[in-house]
Length: 302
Image 1 (spheres, one colour):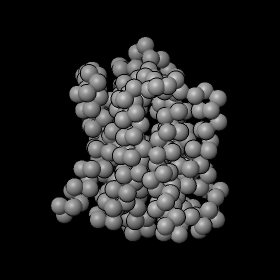
Image 2 (image 1 turned 135 degrees about the vertical axis):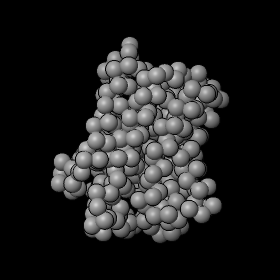
Image 3 (image 1 turned 90 degrees about the vertical axis):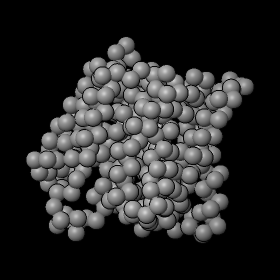
Image 4 (image 1 turned 120 degrees about the vertical axis):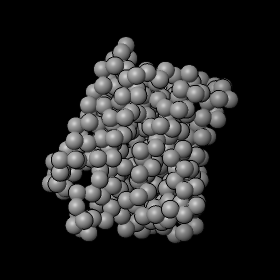
């Protein structure tokens, strides 16, 4: 890859690993709904004017049904679930559990008949699910089952959302799709925030975390990711998803003093290794008929 590609790759890897840290800081003072509302509102302020300037809004609104479905499945539900989960789980553990998205995506593709799995890919699926089971069994502890269920719902959303995007919205300009999806989420969560407003004032650390979520993890990460896709292609660009858990773990351990245990290390190795194997192309023919296989199992904005 070129130097620019490596810079974009590093930037996206960092920006996709940051949300879990910022969410963990924010849930100390804000409800999950308020966090989603603030993050989306900041993203709308930054991305919607750009989409309007490019005259992209009208064409995308003609596809409002899949757009609404994408917004609900990719943004509204997963981001709320992450906030709920991180009230109990560490940011590093949440980020690592979310790394199961490529594995679940590969399983969905296999069960639907869209792809055939060879022995290596089946082994990857098994390793990935064993890694998730190890994390749940060894690390969740007193947090209970509900936060894990919340993360599972986020994983499902992050798996299905890109499929909707690829099937129904692939021909639409990405900036407008994301901007309008964020705007949809703002409208959805505005009543909840109005009925249960946050207690003011919030600390400066939470304000900075919300700004980071909206500016860095939403608007900037979207722009950087699609720049990376343009530089190296979608199949290579989504490899950045394998960097996210390491970033989430490093930030959680280094900045929040979260524990790094043997269970975390084992789960990390199994999930990442399983993801790499489970999402590898089955054969050259598969690549010819489906040039973006990995794009269907990863999310543009985690």
